[in-house]
Image 1 (cartoon, rainbow over the protein chains, first blue to last red):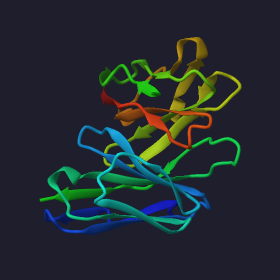
Image 2: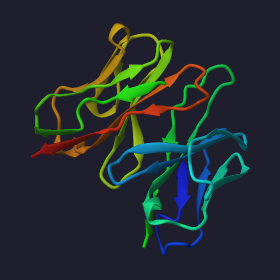
Image 3: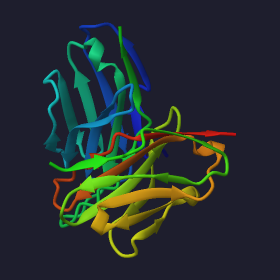
Image 4: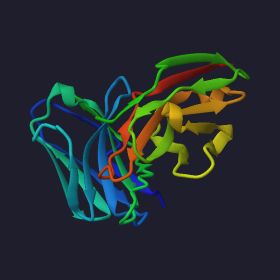
Length: 116
Length: 114
């Protein structure tokens, strides 16, 4: 009964490969996010979807493409992986009211991506 | 642009010492404020939050934070830390109507020596 789950937990791959990370939330939330956390623990938002619609798209290389098949899932596909993509990727979700965004976010366990 | 500043990047304390981690933000309007904690090797968890009302907010594990609007601050405090409080602490701010985006501080790494 994990609230926000991610697979895989660890991902080790070669430069140039394409990989995907999956995220699912069973909280009934309507907004989901992808974050990248680098080795210095700096947390950077990458994308956010609300009801399957992209609402936040930060300055991220277009090798990164999020896909939301439904509001409980937000996957991240990365093409042509580079060394600098090595990081921990966190998925999160929140429930926002139409008028006020409280934005309390619930995080998944993270996916540690290592590009060799 | 909005920003969040956490003054202490690395803090080392002995058990039973008191803790205060600073957080300042730049946003002139109504804000929602959060402190998250990340224990070693784990995901981020909410410690406490402020939306409105009493500016002194109590969180889990004996943490509290005080919102001082005039100082644009939301400092985190704990009167007596434990070894298990060793973690990374993140302050985050969301301005009302800010398209659901949280602005995050860079984090403070706390090490508590037994």
